[in-house]
Image 1: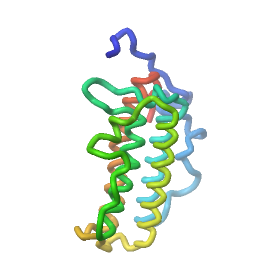
Image 2 (image 1 turned 45 degrees about the vertical axis):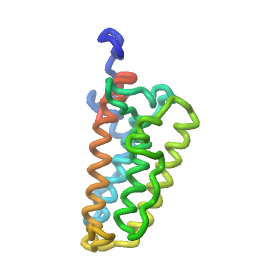
Image 3 (image 1 turned 180 degrees about the vertical axis):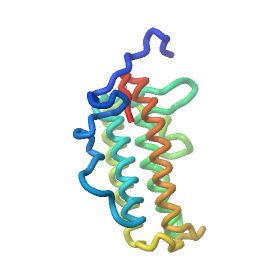
Image 4 (image 1 turned 90 degrees about the vertical axis):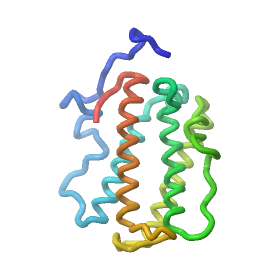
Length: 189
């Protein structure tokens, strides 16, 4: 456990607004012009930005820093969040399709966090898993442009599924804010 004196100094790369992660012109989530038209495009845009935010919170860290736990007894780490969201993307596909569910990526409950160890191979695999699972879920949902359509054995609407995905990433991006600050003191939206 870290002592109070071991806390990193808070800092940001931003120079325009001191509470931002990056200056507006350097933030890849900022785009020129108006936002997307329509509900579906707006939901997809928010999801894209939260996914990018998670990656931004992890950038520039080594395997040890990514795997560093928050505070005992929590097993949460930035690497654990990447693995967890890969697992969740896979699980969401189970909501859409009928039949046998896809197997868990990492095994039993909390294995996504418990297995987030400070090894570069684990980090590389986690990012590969996340990209693959995001792409597979996106491809499946692209077949359903009607947000009101209900799918799967529980008849969940596509809208509910997309909003739930945004909520999951948003919640974990909040965790990532705190985890990153704990690792090296970097702060910002």
